[in-house]
Amino acid sequence: MHDLREIRENPDKFRTGLIRRGEDPTVIDLILNLDEQRRGTILEVENKKSRRNSVSQQVGELKKKGEDTTSIIEEMKALGEEIKALDEKQNETENKIDELLLGIPNVPHPSIPDGKDDKENVTVNLWGEPTKFAFDPKAHWDLGTALDILDFERAGKITGSRFTILKTHAAKMARALISFMIDVHTEKHGYSEVYPPYMVNTASMTGTGQLPKFAEDAFKVSNTDYWLVPTAEVPVTNMYRDEVLDIAELPKYHVAYTACFRAEAGSAGRDTRGLIRQHQFDKVELVKFVLPEDSYAELDKLVADAAEILQLLKLPYRKIMMCTGDVGFSAAKKFDLEVWMPSYNNYVEISSCSNFEAFQARRANIRFRRSQGAKPEFVHTLNGSGLAVGRTLAAILENYQAEDGSIIVPEVLRPYMGIDKISK
RNA sequence: GGAGAGAUGUCCGAGAGGUUGAAGGAGCCGCUCUCGAAAAGCGGUAGGUGUUUACGCGCCUCGUGGGUUCAAAUCCCACUCUCUCCGCCA
Image (cartoon, rainbow, N blue to C red):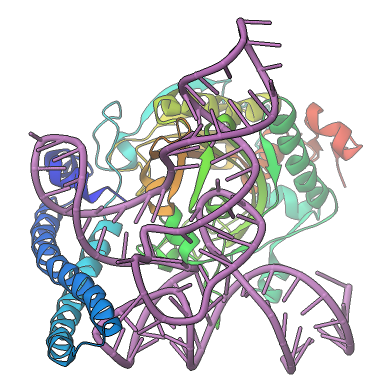
C-alpha cells in the first residue's frame, strides 16, 4: 500500500509506476479527488467536534454551579446529529479510498527493465551448464514412479489432482533438503529459524498483499477467518505487524520452513505432470526486515544466499531480473532463480527474491525508530525462497539420474540421508 | 466445551460518567552536583491525522466494533485475545 500523502504530493511517480506495469493510471486521479473531498469534510466535522468538546466541558462546570443547561443541551443534541451524519459520509469516503489504495501495485524500481510479460525478463547470469547425458534422460515423474518413491495416483485418490505422496527415499530426501537448507541459512548466513502457523488470519494476508486482490489464489478455511499459508512469507512478515522494532535488532533475518498451499486458479492445464505445480508443497523461506537505505544491498545478499543452496547441490541455474510486467504486485524489484530441468529442456523457477521496500511494512504497520524519541519509520521487507523443496527434489532426480534409472544423492545431502544412491 | 478473571502509554500500575491523553513508579534522554562515575535533585519523554512557512492549534486513539449521553478509559451490547480452574485430547 502507498502513502496517501505521498500520492498527493507526487502523483506522477505513481502514475508512471502504473504505466510501466501496463496498468491504468487514472485510479490516481480518482484517489486524489476522493482525498480532496475527504479533507474538506474533515475540516467541517472537526470544527463541530471541537465546539462540542468545549461546550460539553462548560456544561459540566455550569451544572456544578447549579445553573440551567437545558437550552445548551438541546443545541448540542442537534450538533451531535450533524456530526454523526458527517462521520458516516467520511467513513464511506475513507473506505473507498482504502479499497482503491489496497489495489494499487508497488512502484517498480528504476533499475528494472520495462516489459509486458515474462518474455521480457532479463537473464543476469548463468551458473553451471545444462546437464548433459549420454543417454535419454527421463522426467522426474517417470523416474519417481519407477523407483516407487513418488505416488501420484494414490494422492489423486485420497485428495485430488496436484497432490503427491512422497515415499521412502523421496520422503527422506525432502526432509533432508529442508534440514540442509535451514542449516546453511542459520549457520552460514545468519538467519534465525522460526516455525510459524500454517493458517493465518485475513489481516495477515492483507498485510503482505495477498488480499484483497488475490483471494482466488488461496485456500480459505471454511467457518473461520483463517487462510492456509501460500508461503511462509505471510506468517513470518506478519510476526511484527503493528510493532515498532528496536533499531539495534535490524537487520532482522528469519528462515522458516512451512508447507505452502495454493489454489492455482488459472493454471489449469499447465505443468500437470510431476512435482512442479502442486496445491501443497514445501518451501524454506527467507524473510528480512531492514533499514530503508540498505534494502537493495540486502536484496543482492538474499539472492546470493538462495543461490548458494543451488551451488552446494551442484544444480545448474540462471538468475533472472523480472521486468515491470512480471515483477509481482507487491514487489519493487524481483530476481528469480531458475534451475535446469531436463524434462522441460529449460530452466524452471525455483526461487523468487523480492524487495518490497515499505509496501508491505505500510500495510502491516511494521516500523522502527532511529533513536530514542525519533518518529517511527517504516522498515523495508524482503523475502525469497531458499528454496522451493518440491522443485529442488524434482531437479535432483532429473539432473542426478543415471542410465539405469537410479539417482545419485548429492554429496551435501549424504550426511542427512545416510545413503549415496537411490535405486530399486 | 463449561466456570471465572483480565486487556490502560516503552514497561509496571492507578483511574469506575465531567478542565484525564490519562496519577504514581520504572526505564530512557537532558541538565545540576562531581576530577569522573554512582547516588541525589530538576526537567523532558505515545501514536495517527488535519491545518500552518513556522511556533502552534484542532480532531481521533485506554483490546476491536457498535450503542447510550450535552459529555465515555469509566455505563450497555457483540467480538477477539490472555490467564486460572474443570472436562476432553495429539
